[in-house]
Image 1 (tube, rainbow, N blue to C red):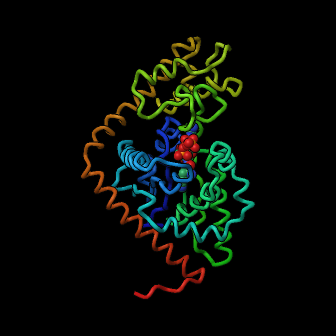
Image 2: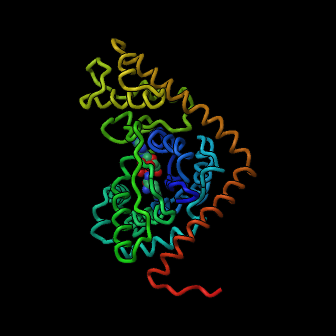
Image 3: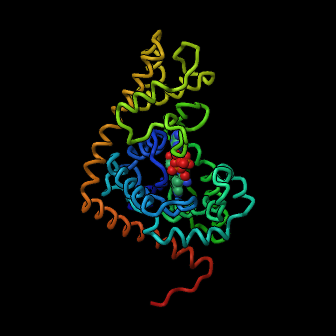
Length: 334
Ligand code: ATP
Ligand code: LTN
């Protein structure tokens, strides 16, 4: 608890360009939570180097992501928006938690299996212990809730196990966090292979809508979206392409599935796809405009970076000192 409010932590990697999946599955849900919770949103650049990065490019993407958090509507006065690398406590706690996590647990992580098969030339130890760093992120702030997409649930479960293990040895040190999955948009699928999640690392450019795609590109990608030959705009598992488009449409236009299905009854796929594209444009265009405006205001963004890093360090150090004491490190002499 901070000032009587529960704590929320989440983060995103600055690798690749953000997709509509990232926005609807994560960022959009974050916006509704800042009144209820004390929120920490990190640009998790320590996680990014688990796969090879071009340094200048990583720096640029990280800044863009931080700016995008603000452009999407997160108020930096209410939400602590910061770079993970500006808070050394993440790495420090991560080391300690490494010693309380089993190889067997990490071996079961599907994201590791997936990423190590995609980066077979660089299966480094950081990629393997990635979930421990994620656990450290969350536990460092004593987070009660963690809004993530469904793909991250396994990591959150591991975080809970590690927290409980630590607490059972040393007493109540960590808050055991709960996942927070938004009602809609929990899993946006690829527009080309609707049984696969929309991912920023997809090689097919038509598979994902990028947050920075211009309106024409968005409409074109939706027109090319893979559907089926059922000729029915119905919400069911047998029609994954249409189901995904309905999910996107409903989330972007704040309608229920029933309302959307009624709206498109008897209409063709072409008309439906256009409407989905337009609903997405109406959501993304204002964010893109605000992003362009904020990107030019270097002083304002720098100020956010500085102030929020101080705030994050303050809370991080509180937990870290407690943990260091519990495991038996000597107190620092000042
Ligand atoms: P990659 O595909 O390269 O692994 P990613 O697109 O999954 O990356 P992350 O930075 O790992 O991006 O995820 C940021 C957040 O976006 C996480 O909370 C994740 O659950 C969410 N997210 C990512 N893809 C989707 C999706 N297709 N639908 C819903 N949420 C998603
Ligand atoms: N692993 C997450 C990003 C991430 C995260 C976190 C999310 C790193 N640390 C802490 C929530 C809480 C991902 O790949 N999406």
